[in-house]
Length: 152
Picture (tube, rainbow, N blue to C red):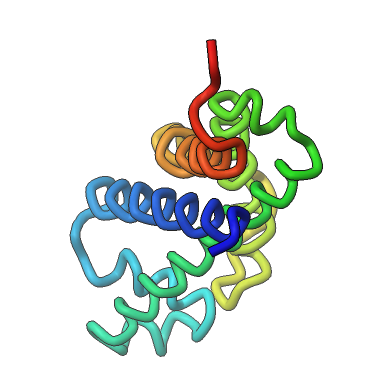
């Protein structure tokens, strides 16, 4: 597997898993948590009426989205090596970007049609996106694309 692909897969899987654990612990272990993700694609009525199948669709979509965000970071990092040299700060900042990108671009354009403005400010969700989403993507990118942790 090529290093870029490996960085994307590791970053996406780590970020998606961290965010999945956060979502289930913060919102509760309920089918609706990931049925809401599925609703972004198939609409609320179909998602919430689907049971375990739409929960599974939501989990698959969740990881797919995580892989896309990881790919964006990794491709940007190849063009801007400062992101890899400062992977901790870049990853934390990227989690913030992902939070606002999801809430102010992706969700308003999805079948959920959430409002674009004012921005949703949820401190716990913002912190989770920084620490369990962006941070692992940054570290995975540095580890794979630079060949290990920074040398001191």
